[in-house]
Length: 475
Image (cartoon, rainbow, N blue to C red):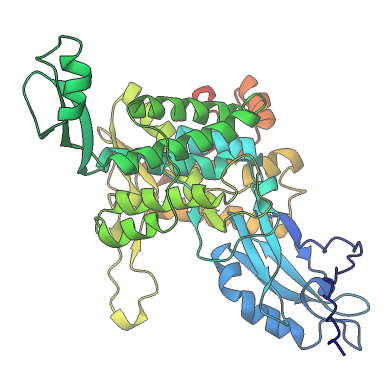
């Protein structure tokens, strides 16, 4: 009996059924120095019998402590009905961080703190200060949803600045070139000489191949690719965003220095190898190669191609201080005088305590000091809403906390004024104002308030000054 033919088994096709889209991770939004935001327990922890956070509150605070600290955000357990809830209180930094699950430790949501005076004002200030005060990138996972909310120039500006520094600091390397020459160099390509030069009667034209010393050709090609990538994304929003327009022009000028190379996307692992083998001590080199990596990874650097973006933070008081410094330097350049800056260690005033063990403060550091003959001007830049709030609500309507903070600012700048030896001292507190508020005050010549304080046989002028957050040229 012949053996039974074994039937060939047909492949089994899996039956796919449509399923709901996975739930996207949420992005919490806040404003610097703004109102607290409440977290939804369901985003970070499983349901509990009581319906509240339970023991997961402590786990959430522990897992997110470092990220919240980087963004100057305070977490607190607030009483609410029916169960206490977790609140996040934004401080003086703008930026984005991931928030981890209290149960798994994985990224469950993102937190974005936006600048109180708007993205356009922050962008104008950063552009006018030459991106000197730029975002600090944090070594955290990507922040869910932040790339679509953050304007592309927030990260593209520092990237272009880093790539410009990298171009200036590039070392030289060798590139193999082919060229027709009258004098031989390197290796003569005899087959091409016979079929091209000699056949055309150009016996004196020698096709040669030789290594040529140039500025790191592969890295320059990668830089051109990255700049074109960022510029293309900036142009997408450039028509409605003046900062994007400015940065796209910066990118265009950088590209003019790279017309001799073909744009090439860096291969996988190339940038890591360059960091390991390259100039490790060259800060500009490391920062530039790192920026190339961000563009390669498409981490929310412009145009919002990806939903998730890099974790970053920017101290707004630092940004405001650099902005005010730029305005003061511009004014002093016209009026004359010497500008001393605290961030450079030029205004440090040591405090000598009789008992070193009781030392609570070692020195005073005014932000800016301007000397002009026997006159002295002390300037403290305060990124606070005091002046705007007082103008809109008035002193009587201001909260006690606002009044106390304003008094502390006055006492601080007067303490600075008391230690300098000058015939006349002007102590200035400079606060940010919204553009509309500043324009209204400027029209009435009321963007400055002054008071005279006689003390110790001399006169101290106390000045409160408001400047618009952005558009230095109009201030």
